[in-house]
Length: 306
Length: 181
Image (cartoon, rainbow over all chains, first blue to last red; front, top):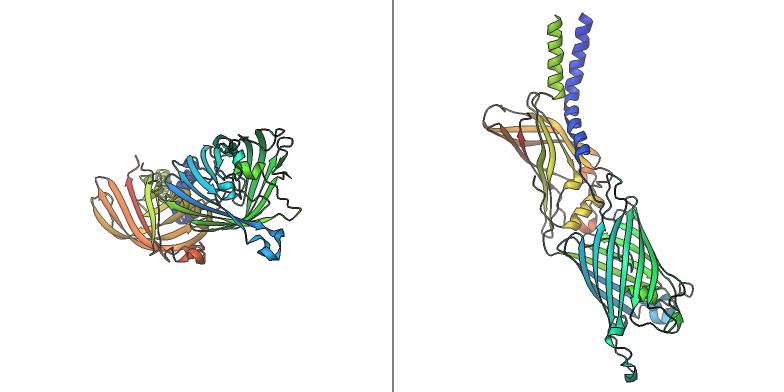
C-alpha cells in the first residue's frame, strides 16, 4: 500500500511539472490542425527574373517602380569601356489593383517602345497541403514602338497598326523549397508586321527561368527563352538567337537590385524573344541591372476580425 | 479506501489534464510595433490560441507567424522569408504561470506577473512581464505589453536596414476568454 502511495506521489509531481507543457501542447497541436490554407509567398524576389515577368505581382494598392538598364556588349572592348558607353533603358510602373490582378506600363529606349500589360493570378500554390502544387498567372502584353522612320517612302509601311505586337503568356511557377523556384512560360506572340514574307506573324516560344537563393537576401537566377524553329528567319538581316540571361538578385528592404548578363539588349517580350541577334558565343553579352522600388499607396489589409 | 483512491485519481487528471474549466480562445490578439524615424513596422495577429488554467494559474499561448498581417505586404513577405523564417519555424509559443492576487470568479481588475518561456525562431528564452486581468460577467480579459529584442532570438537584421528597425520591438497582447462550456 505504501508503495502505491509513493508511486502516486511521484505521478503527481511529474504531472505537475508537465501540466504546463501539456497545456501548451494541447493548443499548439490544435493550432497545427486548425490552420487554414496558406499560400506560398516569395516564389521570386522581383517582378522580373531578368527579362521574363514572374508570377509575382504587387499587392493590392502597391506600386512598383522598375528601372531596367542594359549597357552595350562586353565585346566592344576597352575603347567603349566594354559596352558601358552605351545604354538602353526601360522605365516601368506596376500596380496591384487586387492581390490577384495587376497592371503595368513601360517605356523603353530601344525603338522608343511603349508597353502595357495585365497580369492575373489564376492559381496560387499552397504550402501546408499539396493540394495546389503550382502558381499560375495569365499575362497579356501589348507593345508599340514609335521610332521615326527617316525614309518618307516607308511611312505608309510603318503605319501605327504595323508597329504593334501582342504577347500572351501562361506563367507556371513552383517554389520547390525556400531556396529553389522554377517558372515555365509558354508564350504566344503576334506581330502585326514581320521582317520578311517567309516569317510568321504568329509565333510560339517556351521560356523557363529559375532562382536559387545563396543567402536569405541574395539569389542567382537564370532564364532561357526558346523560340520554336522555322517561324522567324532573321531580324535586320542577322540570324536570330535565343535569349539566355543570368542574374544576381540582392534584396534590401523595399528595393531589389538585379545585376544581369544577357545576350538580349531589349526588354519587351516581342523584342527579346523574337528579335535577339546577340550571341553568347561571339561575346555579345550585355551587362545591365534591374532596380525595383516598392511604394505603398494604400495600406494592404487589416487583420481579419473573427 | 477504494473510493478515496478513485476520487484522488479523478482529481489528479482534472487538475493536470486541463479538462476542468479551462479558459480557452482561438482569437487572441498579439501585435508588435517598431518605430524609427525612417520607418514604422507593425504586424498584428488576431488568431492567437491562448489557454488559462484558473486552478493551477498556468497559461499558454501559440501563434502562427504566417498569420501576422502587415500594412505593407512586402514587409509581410520579408518578415516570413528573411526574419522569422516561418517555413522552418512556423509557430511562436509561450508557456508559463501567473502569480499575484486573482479570483476569476469575482468581477474585478487584477494586476499580475506572468513568468515563463517564449519560443520564437527556434530559440527559447525566459520572459517575465506584468499583465492585467479584468474579470467582468464571466469574461476574462488579459492584456500585457513588453519588449523583445530580435537579436535575442537569433533573428539577424542586416546593416543596411538596421536603422529602419527598432532595437526592441514593443509587443502587445490582448486575450479575451470566456469559460469553456
